[in-house]
Length: 153
Image 1 (cartoon, rainbow, N blue to C red):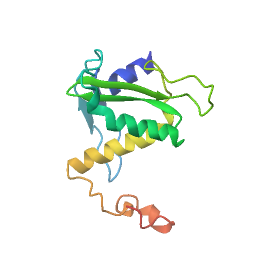
Image 2 (cartoon, helix red, strand yellow):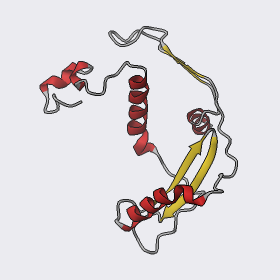
Image 3 (tube, helix red, strand yellow):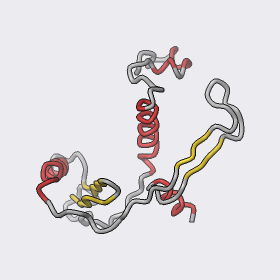
Image 4 (cartoon, rainbow, N blue to C red):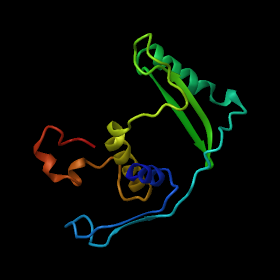
């Protein structure tokens, strides 16, 4: 139940609201948070009428499989609230007898959570002129100044 609710929220089907119950000193006040309205995406069949439109990206994915960058995956491209492309490529593993990836393949995205969440948040802050990308990380996390990554941006 919670997993389905999370997926609905992540894909815009459900409204997301959250408020901090306490103040986080020098970061955010109690009650700060977000309110994202629901913006449902129409998951109708893909609009793949013009197959040439995605030829280059499909070729890149096939080359990635050939070069063993990834065993496979499913590329989903959304455009103007619609699914424009849903393209499976490769296999589940590098084994030649591994099953091929299909449109219906479900992936565990747990390993992507930190990267996707952090990158999305950083880009939203950047777009709002609240996070200059060339600022040192130590401007925000001063405790890193003592470590080997003190110059990281």
